[in-house]
Every structure is written in C-alpha cells, then in structure tokens.
Image 1 (cartoon, helix red, strand yellow):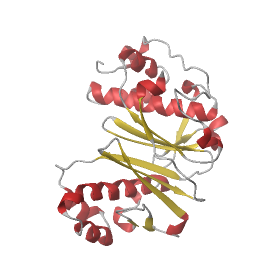
Image 2 (cartoon, one colour):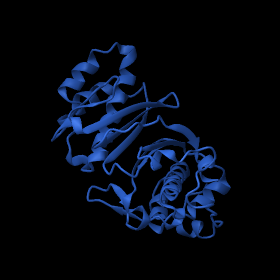
Image 3 (cartoon, rainbow, N blue to C red):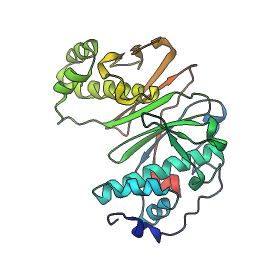
Length: 266
C-alpha cells in the first residue's frame, strides 16, 4: 500500500462489518459470556481489498496516526491492528466496528467511551506482524504484551538497567542457551503489569518483581498486595512470548489461538 494520506484514504471502498455481535469463522463467544478474559492473537496480514475496507472503520484520528508511520508496511500493520480491535469490541458490544468510540486515560491507556461498551474492558499489544488482544466484561484492570524473541539483541545491558535485582540475578543463572527465552518471558510479564496498572512510564521497571519461569506470577508489586494480581504467560506462534496480567478474582484463561487479520475481518 502506498504511503497513506487522508486524500488517499478518502476513496476507499465501503466496509461491510457483517452482523454486530457475531463471531468470525469458528470462534466461540462463551468466554465473555461466562466472565472469562478472551485472548486473541492476530497476524497483521490481509489482502489489499480487506485492508482498504478495514480503513473505513477507523476514526479520523486513527487514520492520521497511521499516516505518520514512515513505511507502508508499518501503516498497514497499524490499520489492521486497530481494525481488528474494533471487530473484537463490536462482537462484545453489539455495535458496528465503525461505531466504537475510544477515550484515553492520563497515561494514554485506551478505554471505551461510554455507551454499550462502558462495561467492556480491553488491552492490546503488537510487535512486528503480530497483535495480541485481551477483552473482558468482568476484569476492569488488565494488560497484555507480546514480543518476538530476538537472539541477536544485546540483552545483558537491558536486564541490568530494567530488571529488579532479583530478576537479573535469576536470569543470569540460566544456561546461555535458555537466556533469550527467559529474558522475553520476564519482559512481557513486566510490560503487561505496567499496562494493566495504566501508569505507563511512571512505574520504574525495577520497582516490582515477576517470575521468569512457570507459573507466571507477580512476586512483588510496585505497591499493594501482589497476591491480588494474576498473571498468565504464553508462547505464541513459536517465536513470540506473550503475557496477560489482571487484577481481581482469578479466572481461567485459554491460551490465544492465532488468526490472520483476513480471517477476523472478513
């Protein structure tokens, strides 16, 4: 897709969102009905016709944000990530995707702006061509994160600067061959906790402690009782690590199945 602009997007074909509330092919809506957190992983790839249709569901602000990305690849991924979020929230609220309205908390965390979605909570994360979404009717405070493991990245300096002393010491005890996976398990768990709290960079990453192995758990919160938080860790599509953190009553969370944006949006 060529670099996006408002003039470029103006003439795109009209999006037909299907029947609001219906799940896309093969998905089950039981999770939200029973109070569980619904996790969905999506490969951000789609045909041009689906990409152009997806753009029709986005707000002017979202289109403007997409246009600020330097490459067409990044623009397309942003468009698809936001369109998939709208599709999932449409399923949960009964609204059409284009009717979804967002508000943003002080630290930038997105929430639904009133209406039927006022009691639907969500969080999203994307890395390269993969996105992860968490949606719930019962857990207001939740965060998700996904990262692709990169064995070429210099991890020692990052761990030293951002992990807690306990996390860093534990990480260094892993055999060299296992350190990359352990690093990313720790990283996504820490990021998902920060996203759940919603205070962004105001929380130092070394001010709390998570487990590096199974089971995923918050060992020490930056404030308050860590036992009130629940954490789940997942491996997605072989080369991605992902995590969910939520506050409140424990609930069973199914591992996310990976879909393509094309499957979700058509």
